[in-house]
Length: 185
Image (cartoon, rainbow, N blue to C red; front, side, top):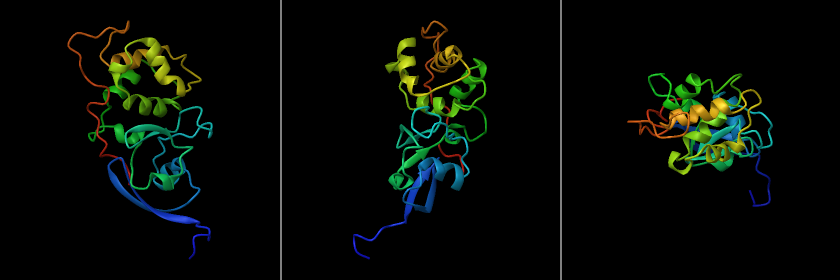
């Protein structure tokens, strides 16, 4: 084969939620489609398919990305974490998931995985105010909640009271208690 012949599919290797994955994928297959259709990780939602809504957010080597804009072949050799990968191995909720539940930070739940993945990658110290939390979450759209309960959930997960002040004795980092070792391969 010479360099000018088209390539229809490539073999890729990556880690998804801690498990090794090898697949032959069409070169134009989106990462979101690989995750949802090939690996049955349907927690990664596809909303706008233009990278605007944030519902498809996953972590690629620890950084939040829009999986509906990422070609699967570009994830070759990378670590991908989906919302399924932040759930502790015992099946309980992570502190962030529990805070969303307890603060009613979700309604229909379609946008929730994208919010969770954006927040898992964030450093709470870099977002000390409601304004900075809002800026962090500005790439995730919710059509149901009005964001107030989402903001409250973030504060609680980050050990802050409802005014944003550090809660006494709470220094639990956002992602603590999570395991990236669970999930389908």
